[in-house]
Image (cartoon, rainbow, N blue to C red):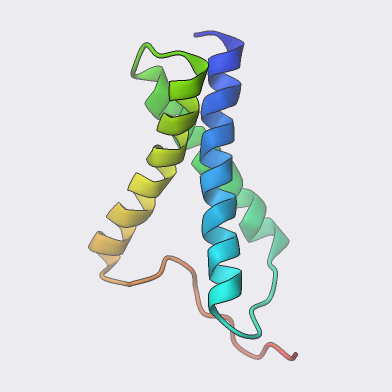
Length: 96
């Protein structure tokens, strides 16, 4: 697999992770920013993107799209299995 495909797939997954986290930040009031959690989600989404893109013989553009969709797929599978509408844990005792 070419390096450009790996970077594109990881980038797609990382963008999906950032979009989900930012969406969560704007959906609720007084939400804290947990840096380790944010970085872990970006890394996980990027890794999933690379793994999914590795299963297909595609170019870098499709690898990015597959990487983005791979993170989205995992999030929805978790929501179905856990029977929760959100994957994020609620933050308690956060002061404005």
